[in-house]
Length: 164
Image (cartoon, rainbow, N blue to C red; front, side, top):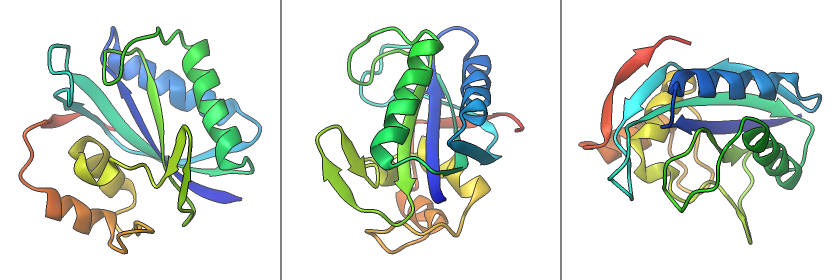
């Protein structure tokens, strides 16, 4: 089984409900086991700012799927939950981001591991640090909590909304 870190986000409708439904769908997949999930956090959008605030969280998974198959499973769950097509960094019902897959470093079209922007985003590092602060980034060689400390201050992080 591979260990995986996942980022979740939503900024359309009942944002927490979308994220909770995605975690439930992940847990129903035969090749995925959800180990832990963070609290939900409200964050301002990064990139395209003229949209609603996001709810973000993180989860730790175990999987028998390869990284490409896992990404396919994420995209299928997004589709089943009704994610509409939008533009890069635009509004979305649900977004599932593969952040880390074991210590794998990969650069393929459509799949880069570790996720290339995760170290720049408090909306990723805060929830991930909550559930696994000692997780080590395979390229930077630093823990998630150290990467979060390096990032401060940030202007897009707002507040914790709800417990797991």
